Amino acid sequence: MADGGGCYGEGTEVFESTVSGIVEDIVSSMAATKTRSSSFSRNISVASTPQIPGLKCGPNGTIFVSSGIPDLDKILGGGFPLGSLVMVMEDIEAPHHMLLLRNFMSQGLVHHQPLLYASPSSEPKSFLGTLPSPVLSKDDKSRDHDPEQEKGLRIAWQYRKYFGEHQQNMEGPRDGKPEYCTDFDLRKPLERRFLSGQRIDCVSLAGSPSLDTFRDRCSTFLAQLPRYDGNLTSAGRIAVQSFYAPQCEYSNREWEMLSFIRSLKSMVRYSNAVAVITFPPSLVSPSFSKRWQHLADTLLSVKAIPDEDKELANLLTGYNDMVGLLNVHKVAHFNTQVPVILEATTFSIKLKKRRSLVLECLNQAPIDGSSGTSYGTSGSCSGSSKTGILDF
Image (cartoon, rainbow, N blue to C red; front, side, top):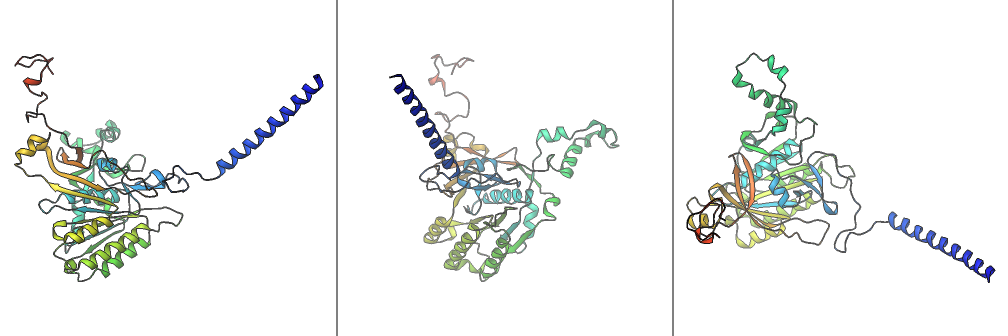
């Protein structure tokens, strides 16, 4: 019996060692193969985070470029995906779409990204002078403040506050890499150092009878930014302002314009670039407007707010600070079949200190329509008509 027990113990040890070896082989083979994160996601390898300024990796291998508005990047889940077509529906009563377009273009120039700008204006280059400049943070100003250098300044003391700003503009960021999304000052024009030494193509669409020339310019621009070349060195941006402008002779050729949008979307999809097109939907026929909106990967719309809308002022808090509304109709999602569900689709457009663009969720005003912190005397727990410090 003892010998039988010993043989049985030795057999068990051999069996356990064999099983453990098989398990190790299975685990190692599973680690070497590519796995799927879910049944709705594309089976792709995880890309390494690009070290290029202005690019950020997202889920399912998506690479984002910033829209130039920090709040909009958060709403869209990271920004505009590379290879996507963004369309913005304008409001003919207010040029709020220009705020989005200016920040989008300035963000690309700050990151030294190639830019192609098309406008119905006869001189589109003049629009570059209206682009906003980056806002300096308090940390950057205090970091560049050197008392020893100020001693050598033989100027009036009122001008000392400009020394730190001038030095920052000359030297740039401390680490040499600008942030992914930058805050811009809408009152201060972009410095010339961001415009010089970069590839900026400006195209005038005024008086153009056909879109073939503009299509060729876009094709040449995107040909230098291939998508699947294995070496991601830069990302380009295309900005088209008021595509359906009456100044263009092709504005009455809706089928030709629809064909151009399809071609541009196909070219952008296989390149390291993002295209943003703004158009007035009120000038386009309803059927073609729906087709254009269907072709967009990300669809936004802006709307002006009347100055004297008492009903809306009583309904929303902070109405006096609003300059417009932003609606998010569609969000691009690549390499997955799971749609993006937003907590809110309508946001208020505000100008912080009249210089920075801010997007906020809409909040309902108190019941009595006042903008104070109290809900009225009837809602207080004290039951008194007079409100005190502890009443709520």
